[in-house]
Length: 143
Image (cartoon, rainbow, N blue to C red; front, top):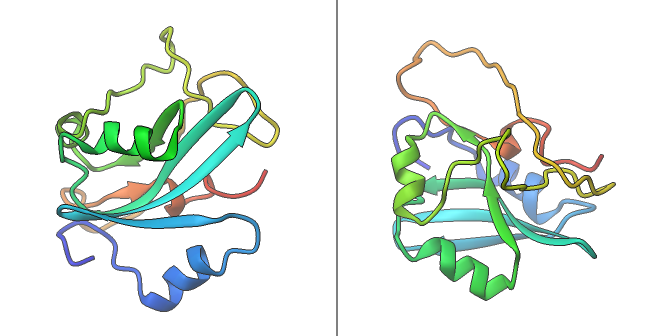
């Protein structure tokens, strides 16, 4: 939590946001040099692992395949800003082209088979060092 540019979240917030969530089950996974917060979305059409938050680096080359094998999912997604694409590429992830042929569904309740472009804004005094992840906004909540 003390890495530059990553928002520090106190234990009380993490418990409220993840451990004590009334609708979703989250997994806290510690890997090599980082911690991931994961949530599964499963519908008949698709099984997805959602990385909703992390601290440290997602850059281990074995991470992507390990998560797919361990959770038996069709895909893993992670929305973020402020993290170089190269960090995800090191972990085996590929950047999604929302207009391309590959479909990574975002909506599961109800399920929608299609890509979406996520727009966001935030205010900071330090544009050079920030990280925004899916759970920092409202993209990780029930519809």
